[in-house]
Length: 311
Image 1 (cartoon, rainbow, N blue to C red):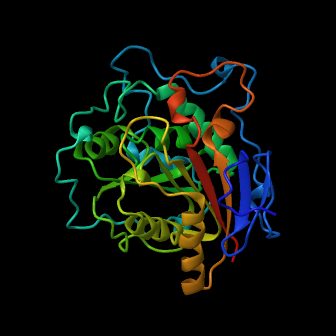
Image 2 (cartoon, rainbow, N blue to C red; image 1 turned 135 degrees about the horizontal axis):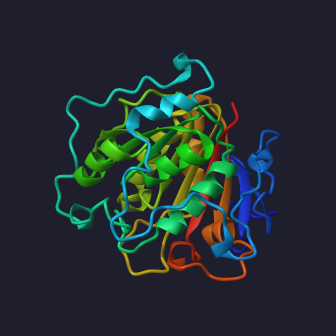
């Protein structure tokens, strides 16, 4: 039996306070009977990455905004009672990142969005996999920390009928997604997320965002708050951890750090969680016969963690 920090396999699973068995299968089971092994297999495994049947974004450097559902339209797909939706109220003192950084110059009305390259196809694939992996259903509430331009939120709405909520620190991303994306978004840069009600969301996601937080203690503090937003049975996905394959500054946060972090929350709150770890190239490229463009997003050691609240 190997520890949850073992990086020799493509995937490993564990409970928040126990060691884990490792497997080459992305659906390896954990020590709990409520393991995320029951989650549906990702749908992005294809003979060719280019053959994936996903919603198409209009071509051209400046995409039309007409294809994007407006903010209020997300409620049309709701299958459950409105009372199940989170009590979502943006802070009255909301503000964006006061520091000038790379996101200040990036615009959401071009295909590069908040990224340095056009990764729109990659993000559609990511949304498809994550929606299936988390078993997102019509009317499910999804909280996205670092929601950027809201593209992921819109795709989760279009593909799965999710009702999405975003926390974004850049003014550009906030203003564009508030107008064009299917997300209820708040402008917020501070690490204090106490204004978001606990145990109110079916799903929580964050992609290539947590690595900005330094030091490890701050990253753990935000991660704990995000996991605390999950309802019983809720599932979270945190992707793009430890992107050491490219030359960018990031906060290292290995698997054992996630284990310690979530175990601390479990000990303080009497809630229990299962964790599954996946290398992102196994999760999003998988058995594809060709390497997708912008494969740097997925290359080892970049990995994802799935957190399932079991009690």
